[in-house]
Image 1 (tube, helix red, strand yellow):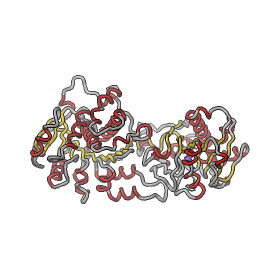
Image 2 (cartoon, helix red, strand yellow):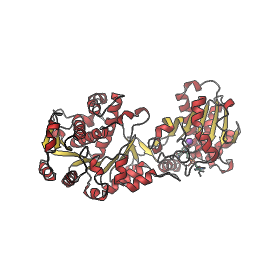
Image 3 (cartoon, protein in one colour):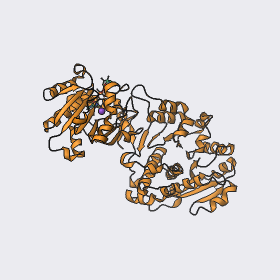
Image 4 (cartoon, protein in one colour):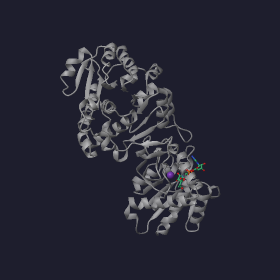
Length: 516
Ligand SMILES: NC(=O)C1=CN([C@@H]2O[C@H](COP(=O)(O)OP(=O)(O)OC[C@H]3O[C@@H](n4cnc5c(N)ncnc54)[C@H](O)[C@@H]3O)[C@@H](O)[C@H]2O)[C@@H](O)CC1
Ligand SMILES: [K+]
């Protein structure tokens, strides 16, 4: 999996490479600037020939330094380029200053003002935002804020192409939160690896596209170097999902999904369908007696057993072939439902808790955390997360006053440590973390945006897909990673007008496309 870095991690990689003597900071800046120009021409081949005009907005740090390199390279291609400096040249860091000096020997550098991107009469073909990158430490103000806030108008009303260097300026590289302003550009060109900002929060509303360019830095291979990295969820390998040719149904596990009472069984049935389609050998619904007729009229391959109360569940779970459980979808939040959760967790099965099984603990989340273990997975959406972790949710919702700001990754990691289990915090960027610090992000953004997934029952299916993979003996983090990817992929394969029932039914096509 590819890593999603923080600004500090990126700086550490750069420092280590410079300290090894293999490269200088100036080399890296030159490669970064050249890589942005390359990406611009790849994105817009019509700009690769002919004479064009550009405004390069350069900030007070090394992001600005990249901007001066870009100015020089475009000028060398025959472009008419003006650099606009936010800050004072004499205060630029050494490498950025060198590139500033090289540029002013070739072309104009004027102070950045509220008119910097161009005037109505004199709009450039391209604006490059090199004001702030990973070094943004406080909200953007003044002329920079004005110019960045106007990029959207410059793009949409005047057709100017806008490119951000590394991160759209004003966006905190570690959290994706906006600090003072909210630019919108066509393209962001980042270096070496994506930064967390390219995936967290509403990243794809700030930049239509993100391209990562190699600048010759090594990717960490040792586990101590990679400790603390966040990983981006990628398509699963076919072999992770294939069934053994000699296998029988019990070799693929038996998932037990607990259902609510009459009139509330639909959610658990969706969950069960997700578990069955992802390949659990057997799936059984545990159903209160009064709801059995209702459930029976809706299921075929899925089985049901009566579960009247917590004692009945404990007794049923003497059967160790029932190796993965899911409680929550449609379960209810009363004492009876809580008794089921309290009976299930001490039996140390792989257990997914979703929906009602999370909300029922909102008055005393610590009671839940005491029962959770390393085979438990909590799958909250934003509201459920706030019920279980109100302090973390408040910190996450607070408007940041400095960078790096508190992120969804920070919140999910702390939640997992506190609960002592795996936490999957849903959203367009779903963040999952285990208590031992492993963390990954699944991104349903940019070309994988799946807005139709925001539909009733979609989360119930996700809980079922995770449960099914747990039944198939995957560890909690792997099950969460693969389930989120499959869930989004099914939605994309189905297309618009998706409803929750369609998600499991799309699984065969998705599996086939993966080569399973
Ligand atoms: N780390 C690396 O490996 C590389 C970094 N490069 C570039 O360098 C960038 C990072 O450079 P820096 O660390 O100098 O950081 P930035 O260029 O993002 O900016 C830091 C400067 O801005 C000031 N600043 C922060 N917030 C401000 C605000 N709201 N208003 C006014 N001033 C503010 C800081 O005091 C500091 O002077 C990267 O994003 C990338 O573009 C590239 O040159 C290539 C390699
Ligand atoms: K930038």
